[in-house]
Image 1 (cartoon, rainbow, N blue to C red):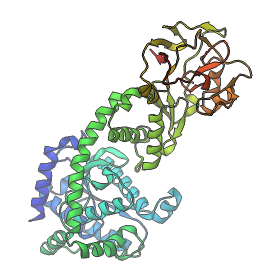
Image 2: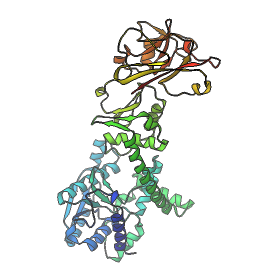
Image 3: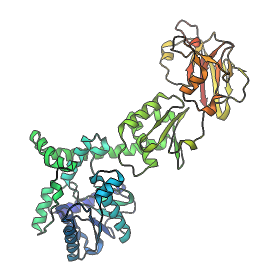
Image 4: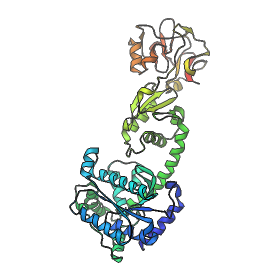
Length: 482
């Protein structure tokens, strides 16, 4: 197939799926920037676009990374080729090795970021809404394998997208018209059209991870399955469709669980987040990172998983750190995420007064800031269900433990945490271990009898208030925020 036909098919795909590209992009574009290195892929792409759109709609962008002696000659070649087709050419030179060292990136990643940054600059300069690059199907197979080896999720296994927002400049569309075209077909086109592309000698250097995949691992895998590249390309297409569906579901889930959002913090509704399927719980957590840092590229699995498990456990006051330094704080009924933990006010149930209050059974007591402590008498006991209760704000005690009082802790008060075989510890230490904010401890509600504590609300039952299967009925204690 003539690559001109490949490009026409790509255009039809773009027009039919405008939702995947920035709103400002449409075909044909008034101006289109083409990233050209001088190699077969980018040179063939420029030639095909020149045939389809004409020179007046195009602009060439070339980056000299300063890594090879022949790079200066390649930049001159690109400029002369563009001039011969009457296409304006914009070129920049940089020290990619120095950029990588300064930013703490690999040489490959530093070069990638520098290219896209310059392409976006050129697009803004010439008024273009899109940039086209020459990634091909072989590049796609290498990308999927590279992501697989690095431990990627679905977003990585979909590989590169044919149309995507430009990294760092999402208002510009990044186009990859040759993503389903093999390197062999592109090289055949160059030969048929009399094009003489430059060959990048660094593509043969095994120091780069991608080159090692191309030169060593893929040929080895082909011994086991000669269709390995085709299968990796198919995997990318299948996963891309699944990922698009999941992204749509993720977006809907995000707005379902989001309670509030400001520049430095956001809050999730606890019950709505817990009701999501596991996949969406993980995905909206990754989206939290992107909400604060849109250009953050890779969100690792382990810290997201650790945060998820803490959120599902639901211990009030627990904190965790997500990638990029976002802090998670577990509160009753909601999860807070912030880049500045000091700006978030402490939140939790608080007593209005310091004197003990007789707790009505059944009945309820209003607490500060919309909190309520409710008591209910359960005449029959479902001991198995009570033992499986995972809600920290729901507790059950023997019905014989009356009268009950609601009060703050007392100086030096001791506690027998349930499960420690009657061992004593200070109530203050329990509060510290449970990460109750210091500002809230003085008036944190405590259910107690005349003789001893019963329940540190939302956190810990006393051993002396433990329920037995032989008890006749129970008192249910439930604290919630209206």
